Length: 214
Image (cartoon, rainbow, N blue to C red; front, side, top):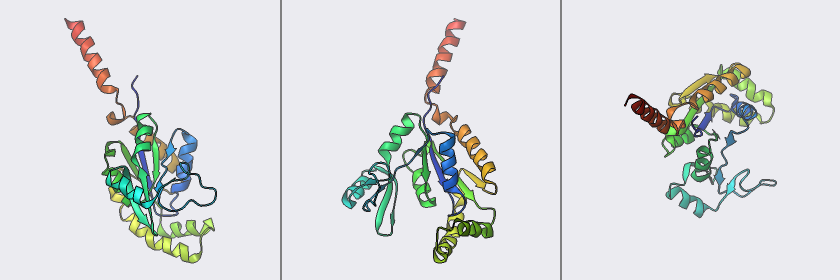
C-alpha cells in the first residue's frame, strides 16, 4: 500500500457557471479536501478570522513573501493584494490532503508554473450557453443589473482561456457535472506523481525478483 500526495485542484469558470456550488459539493463528498486560504493586504471585515477566512498581512510583508517565492500565485485587485501562501499548501499535500483553489485563469497559470506544478489538476467549467449564463446570474438575485452586466462582459475573457486547463466540462446538468468532477479527481489521485511510495515498492519487487531467481 502506498502513501498518497495531495492535489492542487484548480477550479475556474466565468461567474454563474456553477463553480462555487460544485466546490461545496466536492467538500460534502470528501471533507478532507481543504479550501485554499488566501493571504490579503486588505483589512479584516466584521466576523472574519485570521487564518480561517484569510491570512491578513501588511503590504510590505506580502511583497516580501512574493519576492521570496512564498506565494504560489498572487494578484492586485481593487487596491489590495491577494495570494496563495505556499507553506500551508505544501503541508496539506504532503499529508495527503487535496487543496481546492477557486481562482481565475491568471491564478491558474501561476499555479501551473509554480514549484508545485507537478501536483496541479486544473478544471474549467463552461456554461451551456451565454443566454443560460445570464439567466443563472439573474436568478441568483444577489447582484444589481449593473453588476450582472459587468460579470457578463468579463465572462468571455474568462471563457477564452479554457484551452489552458487539463479538463473542461460543460455544466449543463449540475449533478452530472458533479459526478464527472469526482471521477476526474479520483483518477488524478492515482497519478504516479501522487504516489510517492511507488518507487520503493518497485525496488522491493525488484529485490524480491532477483533473490527469487538467484
